[in-house]
Image: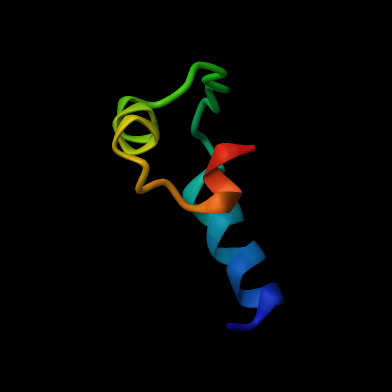
Length: 44
């Protein structure tokens, strides 16, 4: 997709939103790692 359009869409969606940065590991990633089915980029 077009990077400019993506940036504009995100700007509109988050204009009055409060962004919360969650730094914990997701349950889905944890389960994938336990099963050995996680993608390489998720493991890092």
